[in-house]
Length: 74
Image 1 (tube, one colour):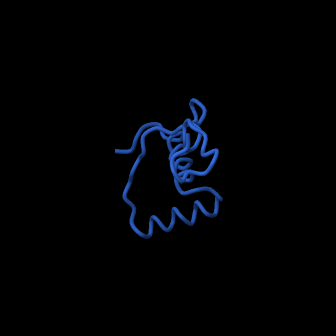
Image 2 (tube, rainbow, N blue to C red):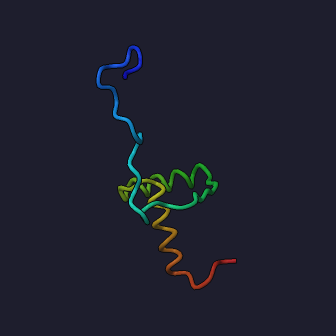
Image 3 (cartoon, helix red, strand yellow):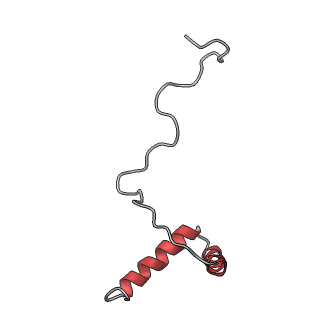
């Protein structure tokens, strides 16, 4: 039975929203850093030049830096 004023047939019952992503494809915890306006503009420009979102660009740069790092800088 539809609610008063609801269109005939109404929306299907069940889960609403975007379907879940496949197992193993989701990202974990967010990583937040503070950047100066100049640094942020540089990240934005580099990401646009690479044709990817800023977070993806930063993830790639960090991953590449970790691959080349023997130990963390102190």
